[in-house]
Image (cartoon, rainbow, N blue to C red; front, side, top):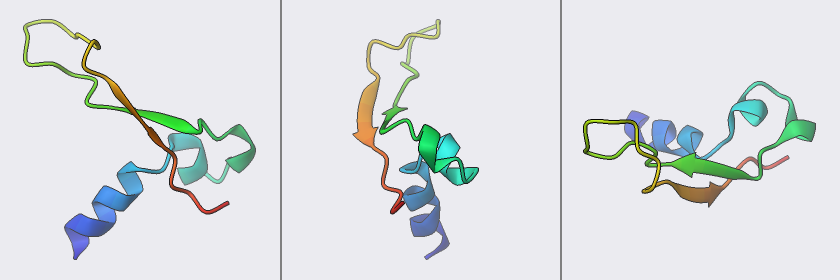
Length: 53
């Protein structure tokens, strides 16, 4: 159960987690790291912020 709540919180943007709902990102980048030797963001996906504000 604990892993589930952690997954749910990953779908809420940083601003909403801090209570700053008026600054909600609307879209959250996920999977920003690739398997390569450098920080590569070509594989970044965007998901909707799941906060219920």
